[in-house]
Length: 382
Image (cartoon, helix red, strand yellow):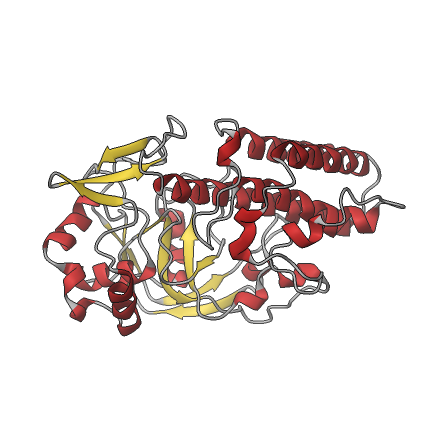
C-alpha cells in the first residue's frame, strides 16, 4: 500500500504545483461552459475521493461541507443535484483558501485509510481517483489556457509553452492486412472503456510517422481551405460558418504574420512546430485536402508501437463506441465513461500537457468533433 499512498501524494501535490503560478484572481473565472475554473478542478478532484471512497470506507466519516456535493459534482446523476456546468465560475465562495483546506482535510483521511489494510475494491477506486485527478491536471492546463487567451494582454503562465518542435521523419509505416487484437490486457490500470479485448480485421494501410506541422497547415489556409466547402463534412461546414472559424484555435494574424497564444504569451507561429488545437472537423478537412485520411483508432493502436506519439492527442476517424462485452460498473463510477458513448470521436496518444505515467497505447480519449481547446493534432493515413 506504500506504493499507492506515494502515487496518491505525488498526484495530489502535482495538481497544486500546477496552480503555484496563479494569482487569487485566476482561480475563479470561467471563460466558456467547457472551461472550468482552477478552483473548481481543485475541489472536484477532492470531492471525488470524498464521495467515492471516504464516505463508504471510513466509519463515522464527517463530510467537510454538505454543500460541496452540489457545488463540485460534475455529471454524476445518481449522486444528486449539482450546479449547472456553465455556472462554475460563479462560485466565488468558498474561497480558494477554504478549497485548499478541503484538500488538506481529504488528504489526511485518505492517508490514514491507505496506511491500513486495503481491500482490492478500495485499491481499484483509489487508482481510479488518482487517474481521474491526472485527467483534470491536463484539463486544468487547457481550461486555464483558454481563459488566459481571452485576456487582451495575453498573460504568461509559465516558461513552458507546451509547443513541441520535435524533429520528425517523413516516412510512412506500412501495416499488412490481418486480424489484430485491440484493447487493454494485463493487470495494470486502465479505464473501463479500454476493456473488452477483441479482434479486428484491418485492410493493408500506411500511417504517417510524422505529425502535421504548423507549416503544413498554413499551406491549407493559404490554399483557402477554410473557404471551400468541398473539403468539409456537412456538419463541419455548418459549424465553420456559424462560428466564423478561419484558423486553429489561438491563432491570429498580426501585421500579416500568424501568431498564436501560448501559456508563455503571444508568440509567432513556428512553422516547424507540431500543429495543435484543431478540431476533428479541421483534421478531417485537412486530410481530405492533402489527399489522405485520418486513421481509425484500431489502425492507430496496431501501429502505435512503431510510432513516436505523445506530443498531441491525435484525432482518429472512429466514433466513440463500446468494445464487445463492455460492462458498466455498478454505482456512481458506472457513469464515468459508458454514458458518453454517442456523438463523440476518439483521440489516441497523449499530449505535452498529459500527466506523467498517464498514457498507454490503449487509452481512448474522446471529445465532440468541434473541440479545439484540447492539445489535439493530426496524423495522416492512406
